[in-house]
Length: 123
Image (cartoon, rainbow, N blue to C red; front, side, top):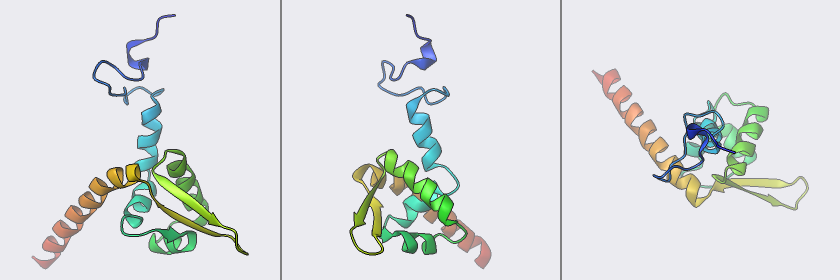
């Protein structure tokens, strides 16, 4: 069975065809660049946070959206999840090494934007 050119998971360059809807890397890109995915990755850059701390650090996110976003980022291997057997259970989240690699440029982008906005407001 011959597979279409864009369906190839990794071409001769070793890169995925992210412009094709069936590419597995595309789903991960969607999770990272979703409305809340970026904020979760930036929030976890400095330290690990429990669920409620993460929710408080991202103003405007609902518990449902935070749960869905975290579920996708954990499944992608960007975020780890640790459950401590207490009553009630304490759930802590942090970035994996891969999550730090992906989140670093996002935090840099955020820093550049806020620096530019600060300069514009001062002028």
